[in-house]
Length: 548
Image: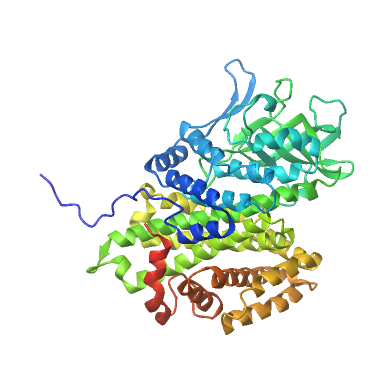
């Protein structure tokens, strides 16, 4: 005998194209790329929003990577085993050109915007596997410091063929790259690294000067990658080296996986501790200039941190809106209730601002505008990643207790939310990097100033914020400015986002963003848009945010 009827429960999230149901992403892709790019991402969006891909995401996180240190005969194996769902996710991501392919396209072709939009659309489904995808994308500009080495590796890193397994790169259809920078004693302070690299001419690797590395790496993600960009000390200072897992003759390069990290989130992706013992590497860039060399890689992975965080917020928002459209309380659907509309609209503003900023920065990379991308990426990485945790927490709360259980995916997003704010430099590291750029790179400051000035004339509030950029820049260049670095970055980031939205978003979006983020029309939490603004625009903002 049934004890009760099940009513007022939200149906499963329907299949939906993650591009076409997100106007801010679709419009940005059309703005900064061509029709061919749009068609590619549209196809990927169908895959991302499918039940099949969602099942892969669940499986890849429930059945976590397993470390196999030794073979049955007691020999070192140092391999990580993944669930088949992980390989399906990787196969789609690599096959969609989300790795290094844009670096092989001419400047101005929209290749990086196409890839950024694809990254946003695809990673809405699952975030962990995008770590090796991102590092593979980012390895190409660093390898450019050694053209001979790049000639052998970049075509493999740019390939659309996913070819898993440790074999010589020349025998593979495609390759994946990782990075090894941080160590136990230093973390982000890589100048404190103790791993040593000793020049050893005539080693078993082509493409440049060979070295043997001895030491450890404390956080080495995607350890089954084909090669890693590794920092190590030389007599001339910190150097950068390409370290393959397998040597050209098929022998394994010493690369001992000590253990996998037991992480808060990002569970589908293996992150390891590695010991190097006479491990062969090829120098990338000048000896002693390794930090400068690998910064090109870091800049690209920081852009992906912005993309990944924007996508994580979008995934959380979709689940919150879906719930509100189907759940009733106190006699009405949640989505029809004014306070819930205020919350959802506020979250939608955050997602659209992050998405538009991310695509604009990818467009700067496409155009070769290194001045704007230098400062813009550092600013955006700090702000967008920092906003993700409170935003996802608020979206989870929209579901109440249903958001706190695993089945709907929000719990996984909540564990994922802090990640990008930590990787590639935590908040303080990024804020201080912005101060360095302001003090030392006047061309970056001028490019940033010109970009925000394009939004002038929209409103007195935004004009005042744009005018204040000069004051903030002057302060940032002063001795002792470090204590206020976060405030500097916050103003630069929000002003840049507002300038972009007044040019590229509907008026109800841009006006609400300017009023709430710059005009004082907002409280300390999401859902505190001014009453008049919320009453007039909230429902339109919610409907735009997920046109599904």
